[in-house]
Image (cartoon, rainbow, N blue to C red; front, side, top):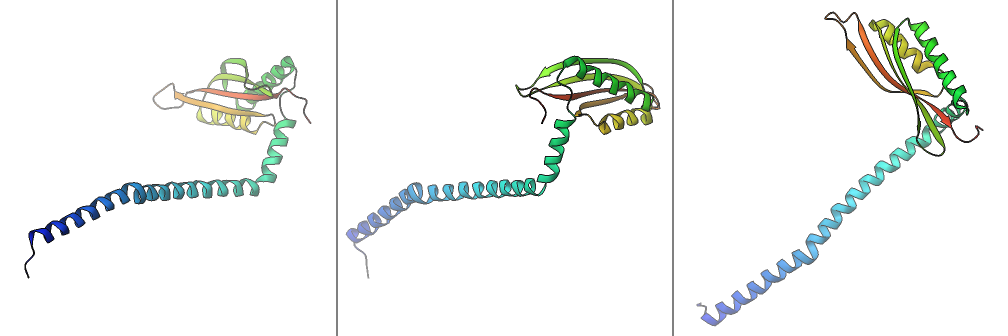
Length: 179
């Protein structure tokens, strides 16, 4: 059985058409479908993460509601001078309880939003590891709505027995009346 030239050309044309159809099918159908499939898989994963995060928030709702209520109740007073005075008294209490040497303090107000502003302080203190740790503990345990923003500790000597600490913390003040 020998193939004629015409039948060979006919088979080659059919194979060429099939190849072109396969290429067009891949470009227009299969590749977009695979890309769409991958996009949908990523969206499903992101939605699963979002649902897990939402579930976690729902589980922690009571604790978060209590924390928010505490923040609102313990926020700085509406009057700027009273708020500043409250923070300065707290700093004095932390210094006294921890026995650090307070080198400097730089307070400033920052308006974050119409609903609230923060009274930000940068304090520099000296002491040993125990006194600096106690200062941070007192700051963190304070009942006011104060949080540590940044903390840097450097050594003054080779032994590390004399340390410098620069801490930036802020107190929260709401613009609206606390409820």
